[in-house]
Length: 152
Image: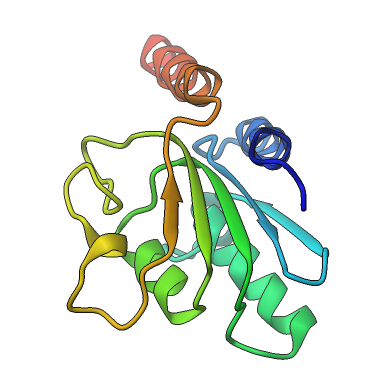
């Protein structure tokens, strides 16, 4: 299985692509149990779709390719801690493990604001690994928003 850092590098590459098209640089890489890899980046602005987060787009692509809405045994790496919506999709898809780069103190639902993925009341709880390539993931976002503020 692809090592966590290598998977996060795939997600970081997607995040960089997002920035080139004017999206907030968040990327995801989803490795299915059969070894197939799906990557995506944030695209709500370019698609006019509030649900087009990197995690959702990667999950949708994997589900279509696998022919199943459940991705049992899959590992998802994401450069920024997932929001509530994305955590819901992760749970419904039964993703086995989530690898998080940077924490999101303003909107994170996997530990920062909410403990959605660890909530014992829910019927699925993926394993969590936090802080993988956190400095690189955080710097990408910090630099993006710093440049945005200067442009205003």
